[in-house]
Length: 321
Image (cartoon, rainbow, N blue to C red):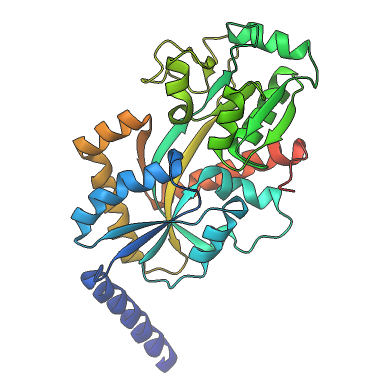
């Protein structure tokens, strides 16, 4: 009975400590660790949410870009950070659910990171250099299949969503292309524009200016509905490839063990930030879809995508090497 009383008292103390901590949180600046260089969907999502969070939380929210090693530098940093809600990870789906299947050993694990909120999602668009003699997705697939191994496709790096997604496209269509990895989308786009590489599947913000200028062909967006910034580009289903969809998401995570009250406060603040008219307008300009999920729903999404992409990655023998 005495042990039960001590356990009850300890539990009550933990709850009181957590509640007291949440009442004073945040009392100093918060840092969002981004596993990508400036620019692109992940960095843009961090800044999209970071600005209104500064006003909503009453403390400066900083963005710290720590790219490299397929995101593992940033993930390890947050996984080992103090569990106090002041160092958070802006996580990219390709790293979060893909890296566990691509690396034999990681310096972090999914269990080291507590889900806070899903923030944004972005479809992908299948693009090609104008020299590719196709004007629609059906003809493009036929062309690539007639040239096995001779068409090059760019990616943002081994194991990136553009790599794994294009591999899934090959698996779905029976196409066979040669992978040319780059360190980020900037270098990849430049080589596609120059015609050194013919194909690039990536998020619309990276290429929509080039598509609109006629410097790249866009065959389809990999989502259920058309992209508002590319209204004339059909979906894969409309273009004759139903069932092929590819979407990236960006979510906020804290070190595992962060007080639940702090995670709840952060999650609610992200939800409010995403609902602001100025946030929605800015997201639309960037070609990003705001999409909120709470901690439990985000955890379920991670579990589902980890299983799905793990099968694709292992089935196609994709590694980060």
